[in-house]
Image (cartoon, rainbow, N blue to C red):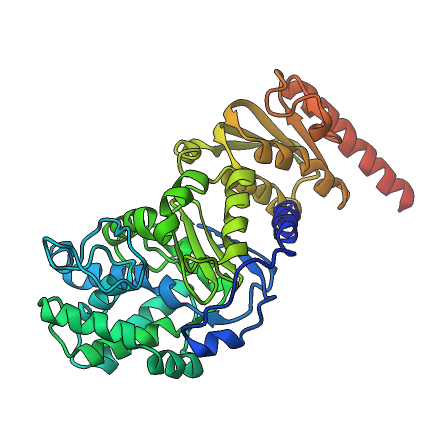
Length: 435
């Protein structure tokens, strides 16, 4: 039944495929050579199951999406207090590459602007720049679940056109923020920005943050829950530069963009999103990437204020009530992630079950996307010779309208079980006649 979710993602990507607004980043010459038509989307749940659409395996450079990860690494390596003495957590209200610090503390205002990101690099304890970068690359790779590498062409191009960041680095040294050589720190920063990723990588890195620092597939803890909490908090308030306020209200997920065209978004406890489209708006954010994230949030109900109770949405019990008939009891609030998990559980059980019955009378709240996904369960089951029923006595979950076309709804579990028994018997009789 994963095809139901896949269909949503493909449709959302297709809605924005013809958008050509924006321009390629031109202050790094190598970035002007990328294909502006590339467009990829990946979504990964915190159990490691992932969906991809479009050019989700196209590589691009991570750029400023690196900032929250190096910040998290610094928090892990030297602790919150030491990091806070060098980097603030307040929105700057300035462009990401502004040559400025906080008027009072003389430190960068937050780690999501270039000044704060350069300072974060300097806080990774190491004997030399090579060791410092090796730690950063290993950490990113652990979050992505595969070895990452550097786009050397972009690295050289960015290093050759890096005068503004060099000015920022020397300014930070003058205020006592950098203890190491500014050029050495900056070289590591430019290398980290040139690390190659895909939309799929970003979704996995985001899912690692969504799971509190535990990689969703390997189960390995790659950073502490405390570091993730601080990092996501700063991403929520500062991650999308001058559009952060609009992002929080319309999308409602901690996120970070990069001038390479990527956007990473995190729904804590549930999923991570990676989008790639290299045409940027005036603030340096991907135009199509931002639109996709807004549509995903609205269509799937992903705003963090909409999902605060979805942790209660779970299959509380399953029981086999007849040969090859299984009842799934759903409780709590059911939004996208809960519906996806439910349908994937049913899909995984298909080898042992001919009729799946969803008992939804104890679901407290449900949004339109989850409702449509449950209504579409039967379509996926009947396509492989199975059957799916819903027990919804008040028709709150599966209403009597066009959205529930094809759904078979019963008022009681007993009625659904009786119908399921009949279905299994008929199927068995047909099989015997054929045999």
